[in-house]
Amino acid sequence: MNTPRSVIVKTMVTTKDVESVFEFLINVKNWESGGALKNVQKTSDDFWLCDSPFGQAKIKLRSNEKFGILDHDFFVDGGKWTVSCRVTPNESGSTVSWLFIRPESMTQEQFEEQLKNFDTEIIGWKKSLEL
Image (cartoon, rainbow, N blue to C red; front, top):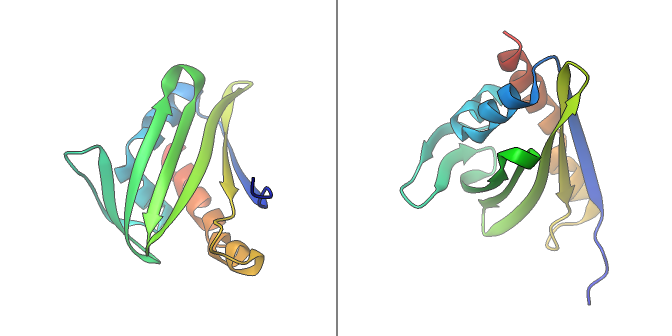
């Protein structure tokens, strides 16, 4: 069995309720408001295609609204990122958390570098949600 790899966790706290946040994020087209993804289109086989800073990408959601699960696989440049994402009630609002496991093909430095811009995406999503 392989040794566990490092993880990075990102969060977004918002005044919007769980249902509103889930509804926003389940539509990957809305991810464009984060600024990194462009030309997001849903395909007939439940994948989403988009242009990312790393090239053409495919996204496959694995969601469960009842439990606030928005896990997804992000395929780009021959690699795959598996992201665990949860929308959790937080008083009158909610918190979204993303857990990224370092892909085996990346060094720790590359992993951290790739996720630097994710904070900017979170700011864009929060702004769009709270309009």
